[in-house]
Image 1 (cartoon, rainbow, N blue to C red):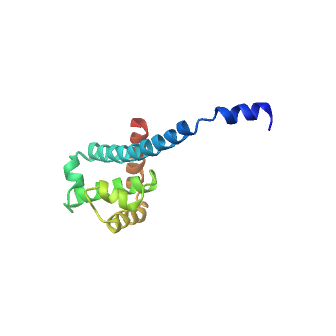
Image 2: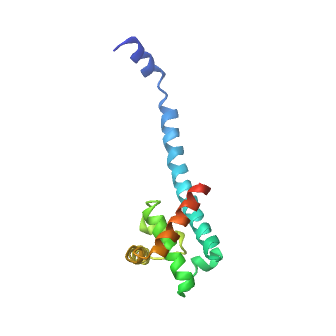
Image 3: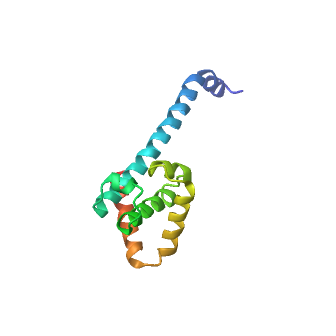
Length: 128
């Protein structure tokens, strides 16, 4: 071992390394939840809804479509897992989230929906 490498090895602080890893793990988990909350807030602002309305069990189109768009953005752009998204959206089942994502993917042919999703996503990027 070279002297430089030996010095680096001797100076390596395992406790600091492990504590940094644990901190990073929890920060990523918290940031992930905050990003989904930001998506929910942006969708609510865009569609003039309250958070309670978006997260409710109501199935009217004026609430269900924004909710599906929010779930789609969380899944596709934030790469969150289905269960986590379902929990964040008022305890929905992961299959409900799958259905929402699939439905938006099928409807993405619509230029209006494409521009809406882009607008919301860029708004989200500006807030992050």
